[in-house]
Each structure stands twice: as C-alpha cells, then as structure tokens.
Length: 255
Image (cartoon, rainbow, N blue to C red; front, side, top):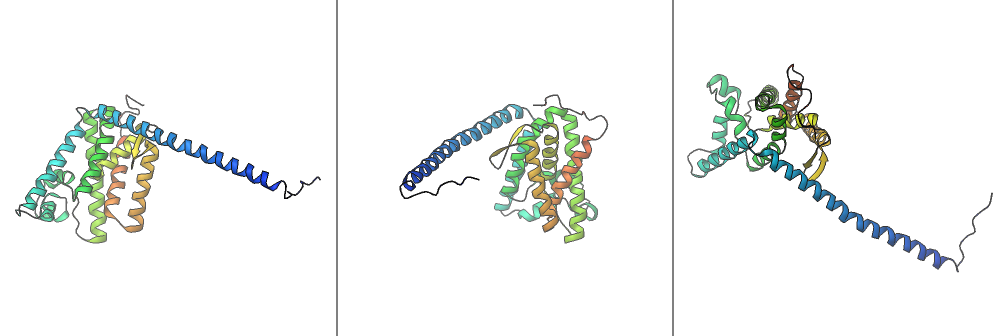
C-alpha cells in the first residue's frame, strides 16, 4: 500500500498558505451566509406581520385584546389612586373556589380570563391572541371560535383549580392563557406549515407549538407550576374540541 510522503521544510510554507487560503475562503463564505440568513428571517417576519395585519381586521380576537387591555388599565388606575389594591381586585375578579362557592361570585367565570396579574402577563397573552386568534376564527367561523375558546378556557380553569388547590391550597386564576394555548394548538393542527414568529424567530406553526408545549410540560411536571398546567389543559381541551362531531376536518384556507 503506497504511503504519502512527509512534508519537507520546502513544502511546509506552501501547505500553510493553502490551509490559510481555504480557511479565509470558508470565513468569507460564512460572512456571506450570515447576512443572507438574516435577510431570510426578516422576509419571513415581514410576511408574517403582513398576514397578521390582514387577517386581524374585524376579528373578535382584536376586540378581546382591547377589552383585556382596558381592564388592565382600569385596575392599574384604581390601584394607583388608592381605591382598591391590585391583588384585591384580582381576588374579586379572578377565579377561585372560595369566590364561587362561598361568596357566590358567579361573574368570575367571565371576568377571570379578562384580567391579568402584570404587564408581562398581559403582553404575552395579547400578542399570542393577535397572532393565532384571527386565523382560527376565519377557519372555523365566529360561533365555533367562541365555542372553542370556552372549552379551552373551561378546561384550563378546571385543571388549575383542582390541581392548584390540591398542591398549593387556595389559588386564584386569572388571564387568557388557557384560551391562548388552545388557539396555539388549534392553529398548529389546522395550519401546520404556516410560518409564525416565536420569540422573534420564524418557525413552522407545528414546530413552534411543540416548543411552547414542551416548555410548559417541563414547568408543570418539574416545577409544579399551576399556570403551566392550565396552559397544557387549555391545549388539551382545544384538541378534544376538534374531535367533536360537526367540527370541520379542514379549514377553508389551508395556507
């Protein structure tokens, strides 16, 4: 079997120059690829936002965003004015076992999803609702969209109250998160290849939903987080709703 000759002192400089040339070529290629990839991300982001602007026009989801934002502003103003503490307001409007059974605050079933604990809680939920809600509403129609939201929210609330009370004692639930994760799951099932933005990065809808649900599953199982459990329950409730008779197998728009 032939052997390659060992490099001599005369050939080493040429070899080093060749290696340096290949290395610089690869670096230049990488430098060209980075702007191309960034440009691709920007194109996907721009297309996603243009689609959102078009689909959100006249959507019930946008109106819910307005209601939730108005509720947050009102609670904040009342808190700053010293009329009622934020925690007390959320305890009165949020969902709890004692509020329902001991005090008969039936309105909590409707008001709990519309109030949020803080600005970050509100911002995440409203952004996700704006991103996923209009497409789901357009695919199923407004009546089925409302029914889907109610099922996802009810499933999330029931799971949160039951497990939260069992693990942590009395809990108060608030926020649109359970419904939002139901919409995220539904959107991924109906539009699996559509590009969405997850933390600023474009991903297929199915992959984005998988990432989010995996994070929530870890937080629920490893950390015992009641909020994450509600998110998973909302997604499960939406999945179950899609299996009901009369719910269309495919949306009118699949792309």
